[in-house]
Length: 287
Image (cartoon, rainbow, N blue to C red; front, side):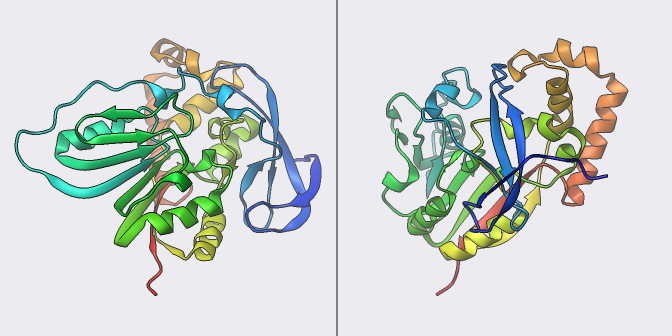
C-alpha cells in the first residue's frame, strides 16, 4: 500500500508542473536542532524541493559545517605548471583547490557565498565570497561538489556555467539524487535531505530538463553513493545527529559483517543506477 502524505497544490520550481505535490516533513539532523522543514516532490520531473527556504539560510551552516574547515597549506611541486583554468563553485575554505595546487595547477579559483570573506592562498588560489553569477572569466573545468543542491536558482546557475565554460570545457556536478534505495528504506530519515540546506534534490529527469533549457547537455552520469546513505540514515532514525556519529557510535549499531554487507549493497546500487549520489558530466551544446 502506498504511504499517505499531505499534499500541497503549487508549481514545481524546476519544470513548472502545477499539481497536488506530496509533502514531506524533514528534521534538521546535521547539527541536531530537529527543526522541521517541509519539502515536496514533483511527480513529473521527480525533483524534491523545499517548500519555503529560511530567510537567513546562512545561520544553518556555521563554521562547523564540514566544507568550511580551513585546510592545511600544501606547497606546489618544485617543477611543472599546469595552466588549466579551474573554478570550484561552493568551495568552502578551498581544501580541494589546495590539493590541485599540490599537483601543479596554477590557475585556481573558487566562489562560496557562505564563507566570511574572500580567501587567497598565494600564489595560485583565489576564492571570492560571492555566487557563481558574479564570477568572470573563461574556465576549462568547473566543479560543483555537493553545492548545486544548496542553490536557490539551479537554472540560472547552469546558465552561468555555460557562460563561464570555455569551448571544449567540462563541468562536473556531484550531488545527491532522487529516487534511490536509501530514500525507499528511510523516507524522511534519509540523511541526504540535509534540511534545510539542501533546497533541491534533483533527479536525472530534472537535470535533463534544466540542462536542455540552459543550452547544456549531460555527457554522462556516474553513481558514486557511499555507505553513509544507510549508516547515517539509520542513526538519524535513532535520533543521533551527524555531528555525534563517530566511529564508536557506528560500532555500537553495526557489526563489521553488517558494514561489509552495506558496502557491497552500495556498490551494487551504484552499478544499477540506484544509489543516492551521482556525478553529472556536463558540456556545452555544440552550436
